[in-house]
Length: 366
Image (cartoon, rainbow, N blue to C red; front, side, top):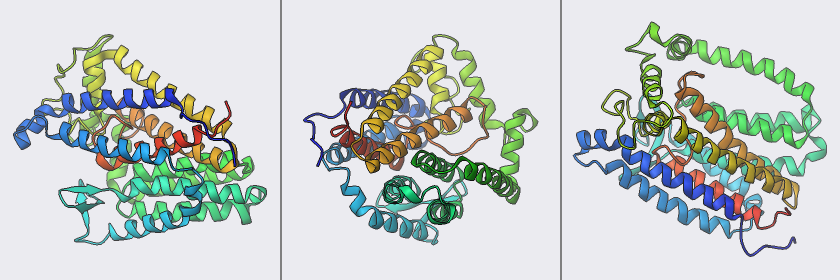
């Protein structure tokens, strides 16, 4: 058993709490007007986000003290539970529908999003599977195919909700893990071609996805419809300039940008804090990813390395997609910005994942 250090990676803790603090401030700033109008309480979303953050922090510190190979033991059980939840969420009366997607299960006054927790469960199981079959990963039949079959089974259930954004993050994360584990590049090239064809098929199968693609290419073709969010997001980012309009001074949050505290919170941040503020947030994410990569490289075993790689890949992919959507570089999809966007399941999941990463850091050699 490797030697356990007394303290985890303190830089990772500091960066995480800094991002969390920025997120709490921006959730209040972005949501105050909408919350006052809808709930007669400008702190409505901020208070709930603070509650989610508290639960997530408790979970993070608890998980930080649970030896990471415990997740290897329970990976199958956790994955099975998440598969069951993904099936339950599709049942009317159990799953709650929002904005055309049945992705939530109500728990009292709150709701959970099973697809968010599936991402972490899949990472834990895939790290176990790949670490135990390292010598077989170069074989398509015995290594790559079983891994992909599992991943795309979960992806299919997520797409039945439908939730293309979360499914894309999960698949992208798993592909990074499989590649790092030693899969052949030739296999990835072939799968890439199949993946592109499959993605095109998914887009063509749903008219609203086609509209999202066309609105991404030219949002001004339908400025009051599919292009509305991108245009309003750019209207927020543009006036922010170098230093921003000032904290709390956003104009787009006055019912122009729909629910700005969620997927488009970075647009409000850029409007209020400018290029400098946005760049500092991206720098914080870069620091977080750097510490995660160091932990992955220093992990004492392959399972720990793959587990850390999966967590870092998940965060990196989610950040890239969210920022890409907000800045008009990618089609609109429902992806939250880790630690900043409003959302209980997403925030709790991210803090739990950081807890796993912190535990690995206590054994990492660097």
